[in-house]
Length: 404
Ligand code: PMP
Image (cartoon, rainbow, N blue to C red):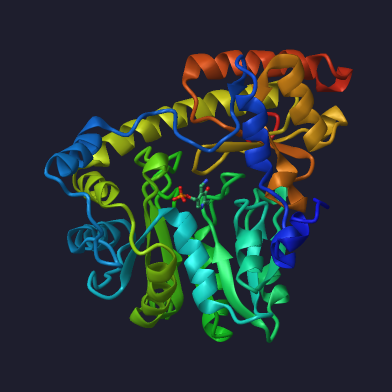
């Protein structure tokens, strides 16, 4: 950007890059024949009974604003759900705010908490919005690189090393987008102890915690001693209930924090859309069976994609949850971007270059397996052809060559 008008854009905004995922999405949309494993979005439509609840709200003429914090009935449903899902009780009157997706909840939380120069520790590779959201709120993003050979676990000792007198927040996301990493309980406990010891706030983005595999059970960092009073829990409807387009999420936290987030929310957003909120009540009260059906379907696809990527010579970590694999493409000798561009151009399959998720994602690509199995099979066949054509050492290897 160098036109006179672009120079009017605030320095801070000019400094941040566009999301690498969006760039790729636009490329894919410009071509009709591409199978996209790119954007992190369920291939299912929102379950019908949830859609019906929104239609019914519209039929009744519910087209108005709601309370800034969200419909009281939705906040009560969230409190009940979180009590069952995480084992922690929140007061729906004061400790829950309904937002326009987890995206907005994160943004208003960073803006509500960070003074200029205060540091936020987060683990990388990570969801694309963390770094720019921290930066736009005036904070300083401090990335800890997690490693494929360590199953992308966040080690408490690495967190401790990153803590400085300016650290205010530790930001967590398990299961992780883009790696599917699942944090072991003992590390989570040690990180909680560090937060207490250094008096830090913890942000826990638990948007994928319904989508766990191999019998795993969710434990929130909230449940460790001294944590509820220093934690913001972020959750939403996009992933588990296949509701990305409804733009609905929420945060649970102590009253003082919710009050501060509410100030930003009421001036920036006012409230989340009422018909989405009505749908969300139905999702929480009656959506469990649909979520489990989708989870099982993702697990089946995960088994297929992990086995096949390893077999084609791309070492791929077996995810503990979410709906992504993070395939190691270093054996091809290509950079993440070269791999993704050539794959889309030569075989019409879209994946996201790993460096879109931070520098430590270089050498990897993210593939989303929230794609119907027949399509996934075709995409994998094409990927196999692409990889097989590159180099002798990336041709077929025994399945499960890496952590499968
Ligand atoms: N957190 C993570 C880890 C995500 O992967 C995403 C979406 N890809 C979000 C938050 C944003 O979700 P929402 O649709 O609720 O804004």
